[in-house]
Length: 233
Ligand SMILES: C[S@@+](CC[C@H](N)C(=O)[O-])C[C@H]1O[C@@H](n2cnc3c(N)ncnc32)[C@H](O)[C@@H]1O
Image (cartoon, rainbow, N blue to C red; front, top):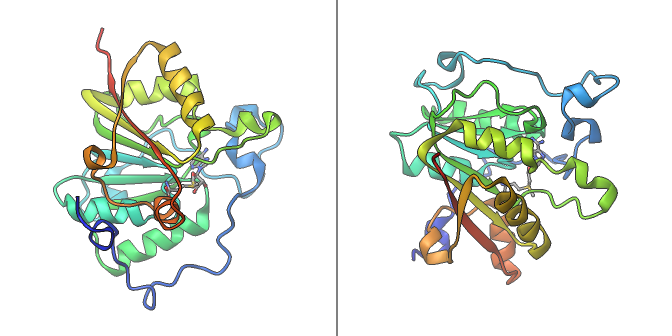
C-alpha cells in the first residue's frame, strides 16, 4: 500500500483555492426527482436525457467510469490522472463543487475528466446501457433522520440504474464511515438480488483517497468498503 501522501492527488490550492462558500448541503429540492416536486426551483440542476460527449470531455470521448456524488473532486481528479486511457464523469448536486472541479480541468487541460451538475435522484438517463466499467459511490450523505431518508440517493430506483448502465463485468464501489449507512445499502443490495457483494480491506481497495476519506484517516474513523459485481441473468 502506498503512503497516504502518494494515494492523495496533489492539487496546487494556491492556484486553485476551494471557494469559501462550499456548503455541506444545498436546498432540499435538489435531492428529489423533478417528477416528485410540485414546483421546480430556478436553481434546480439541469435535466439531461442525453448528452453529446464531444461537448463534455476535452478528448471528446464517452465516459467509462462514474463517480456519483464526487463532492470536492480529489478522488475524481486523482483516479483520472492515474488512468489517462479512461474517461471519468463525476456527478454532483453542489454547483460550486462542480465549478471548482471543472475550473481545474480546464486550467490544467485534463482530457479525460469532467464534473456534471446533476441530481441522480433523476436517474442517469444520459448514460448508455451496459457502457460503464466502474461506478464509485463514496461516502454518501447519511441523512440519518427518518424524515430525511427520502433524500438518500441510494434506493431501488438508483440500483436499477446502476445495474442498467454497468457492463456485464462492471463493478460498483461503495464506501462509508457509518455502520448504519453500510447496513442500509447492503440490505437494499441483497433485496435487489442483482449484485454480488464483497467486503474489502484497504489493501484490496487500493484507490485514491477521497476528500471525506482523508478526514476519516486523519481522525482515525473506521470505514466500510464494498465492491459489488453484477449478477448476469
Ligand atoms: C459526504 S459527500 C462525499 C463526497 C466525495 N465522494 C468524498 O468521498 O469526499 C457526498 C456528496 O454527494 C453529493 N450528493 C448527494 N446527493 C446527491 C444527488 N442526488 N445527486 C448528486 N450528488 C449528490 C453531495 O452533494 C456531496 O457532495
